Length: 175
Image (cartoon, rainbow, N blue to C red; front, top):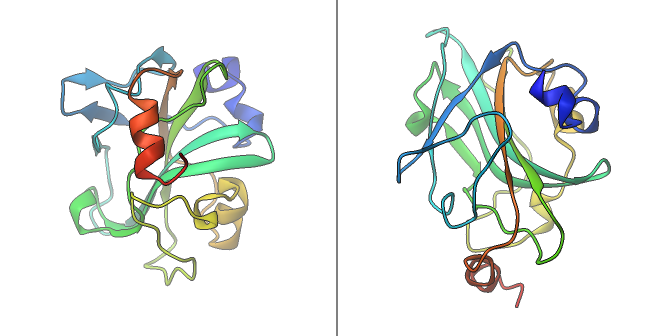
């Protein structure tokens, strides 16, 4: 219901995920469907867990839907065996929240897809120290390209500018 209330359905996905991802940051901050968090609280990569089929592969993404036609991908890991995120293929390294000052709350969304099989991704990879066009794409189109279907789990938080954002933007070469 929270995905609909915050317009993630239909802005980035067509159907709300049936399960909630457990997302925890190193400072004991938990993501809880729409709870406001600060960029300072989410600057380090979180742990993510879910009920998994141990014989399946999964894809995890974190996206900021800036507009319905512009999404910034903060994290993308594919070919995750079962729920062992550490053994997945990192396509885009984790970048925390960095909304522009005065832009209000952004909806940072975690989505988990069950892959049809192990996949060969053709997209370019991007480190966490780089803002590249590789991070600008619609997750709906990506899911369609790789036949991922609808997400099997998800979670999200809201964040707006705080004093950490200029540090992140400098790291990304945006200042």
